[in-house]
Image 1 (cartoon, rainbow, N blue to C red):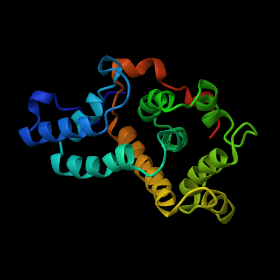
Image 2: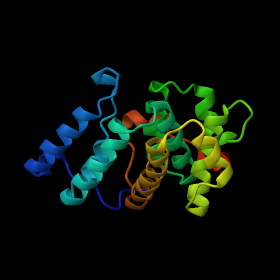
Image 3: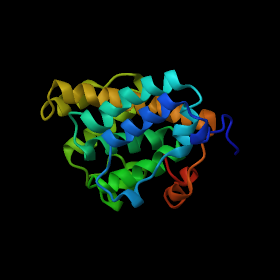
Image 4: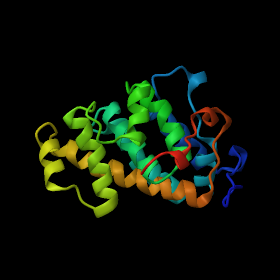
Length: 198
């Protein structure tokens, strides 16, 4: 599928947009070496076609990536489940890489899609995955799941759970609706959603 909104080349971006993205990238740098980082040029290039929206969204997204009260591992667990449920291949591939860096094992990453209620999950991890499903299905975290999370998370962490799921669900809709294509570095991480249950 070709992109419905093709990404703008960096040379086409406004000076303000270029400076903003450079600052965004610096503030959310991963622990991986620079040459191993995924640039996200197709996503950022598409957003660059609407600088006002891009800068507002990325400012919010920066909190989730660099200022969240959740651990990186918890954040990535949530995002992977969102990507799976929304069938967002780009989002899944990008966050499989980040999840590995955050400490999720290959088996745990596979389990996010294959068996979200598996006995191998800790009670907290299972509740996080359940929270994603409940938010996407019912727009609220159920009482039992909330109670489990409330035993280990403070108010800010609970708020970050909801906002992380909401943000990445919205981003999944944008990625799939705009037809944003994965960069070459993401291709090995693309999922086969046709073989995976919701």
